[in-house]
Amino acid sequence: MAQKKINKKKVVGLILVIAIIVFLVVNAYGKNEYKENNNVETSSQVTNNTQETNSISEGEEEKKYEDVDIPETLGDYDVLGQLVIEKIGVRQNILSKTESGSLKLGVTKFYPPEVDINEAGNFCICGHNWNNILKRLDEMNIGDQFYLITRETKERIDYEIYDKYSCDPTDLSCLDQNQDGNKEVTLITCNPGGLTRLICKAREV
Image 1 (cartoon, one colour):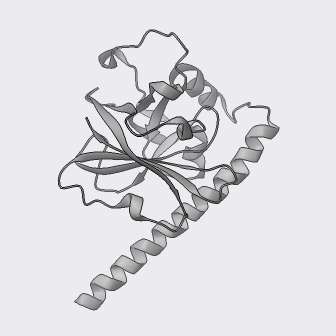
Image 2 (image 1 turned 90 degrees about the horizontal axis):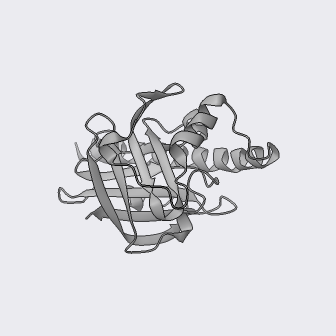
């Protein structure tokens, strides 16, 4: 029985490492493609998402979260809710899967499968280091806040960053779920060059 548990952990760990490596590779190639196209997104859906939900203009009046229009789907992906980081001008729809297609559209739920947006546990979100996504995440500091809005209920929960660091892509400790029933969010992107990851960990205020 112990041997089976160990093997299961190894398999899960290997899958996560592969997923992170794919994320980094896609980010590196996607970033070059992004620059070559002079900041033109790859589809009209991406353009609409950027114009309508991704940017918060300086001085723009903040919308009440009850009134925010969050689509059920974006491209081929379900939308779980929105990530709003006012300090760095981010308003992103959170897509349900992390793969090359969804990462081109915005931020995505990375881990774990059993924890949904604004639920107890460590809800991990990843996104490209692109201008309209998480390029300015390095400007966030401990004590800064952001919030998530659940699409179905329009529930808003505020989170405050308590840790920020860079790590090797094989370091999976940021995905740990030992939160004792607390609601936490981990934001993940690549540092310039794509060799390391930038991690911002936050807990419910």
